[in-house]
Amino acid sequence: MLYNFAVLFGTLLAMEGVGTLAHKYVMHGWGWWLHRSHHAPQLGVLELNDVYLLALALIATALVALGKAGHAPLQWVGAGVAGYGVLYVLLHDGLFHRHWPRAPRPVNRYLKRLQRAHRLHHAVKGRSGSVSFGFFYAPPLAVLKRQLRARRQR
Ligand SMILES: [Zn+2]
Ligand SMILES: [Zn+2]
Image (tube, rainbow, N blue to C red; front, side, top):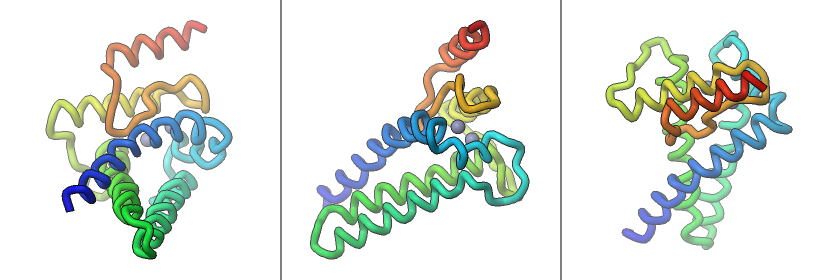
């Protein structure tokens, strides 16, 4: 049991790395056509960018199915991927962008820093030159602001 939780928790941690890299090199790279909707003013409840969440859900489901079919502990890796997706929706859609009818507010310094860092991510309009690609870790705001300033001067 403890081993399974370690796998789950390790997957959650690893997913932040995977998520950051995917956001930087895929979503702001060849996958920009899907992610662009997220950097434009929002029109409805859903955006094309949600396809990435759907892909995440499919990967998690496949991993859980494989785990159940005898390839343990893949079901716990799948649970970690799914957990990351749920936390992402709560934090990113709920707290950062307030896509919900009732807007929660960040209650501590960590969440406030994440929210401000994500606002800086959206400060750059287009595909390139953005900062802060992570969702659960953000570099210090001073560093991000310096990066943004340096990029504008280029
Ligand atoms: Zn982005
Ligand atoms: Zn966002």
